[in-house]
Image (cartoon, rainbow, N blue to C red; front, top):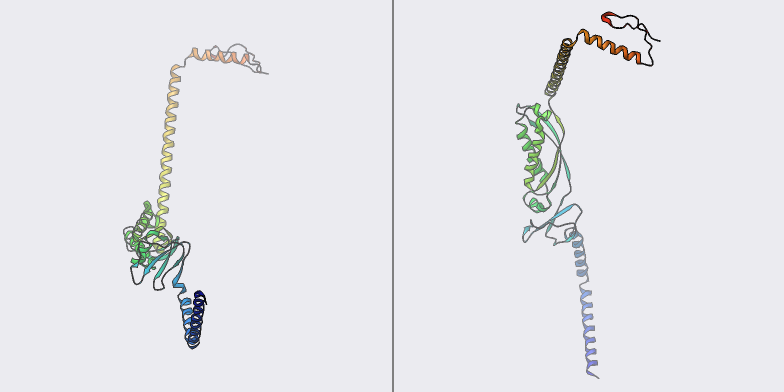
Length: 295
């Protein structure tokens, strides 16, 4: 028998022996194999959500490595599927604009309460999501945004009167809101806008301010009318002065010869008119013709 044929026979015999041995082992250990397979399947199902992580559109992921580096502050995981070890964690943050509604009460410089109802539009800064997760956490709206905004509004409104706040005198509310936005921006969050949905004062204070505003408007209107009438009186005075000067000039230059000459000119113009027939008889006062009538 050729050598290669002997080797093939020996290989087949060894394979048959190994398969028989595995079959006997599998038969003896079948319960253990079934249990192990079930346990593995259960682990895969249970840990599926910890191994396969999907970062959805409008989100940013932050990795926390349990046994190595901890929070990765310099790496932001973008949209898509990410496969991680089950003992690590991938936190997801929404980077879209979100709206936070908040109501609270502040005091003015006179200790009068003002109820504010705010709508805060914000989103975390994408590049700083890792630092935000490490230093603040997912509860950053309650830990950073609201306390910072409340602090600025209480401090600034406490320096102004109720009238200034209620009427937004000199843009005081706009200035306060700008300060609040800048303050929150230092903590890895971008506050796009703070909208004051309503501002409520005690009824007595509000009525007093409104009455004061009405009185101020009426005073301004009265002052405007006085100024208008004064300008009109000045205009009439100047007009009367001009008429008086004009009359003085006319009186100084008017004489009998000039009057007679202007009368003759007027008579000639009437006589030359196609629509007028003038009958002149004799002469009138100062030697002027007398116009009796026309046809």
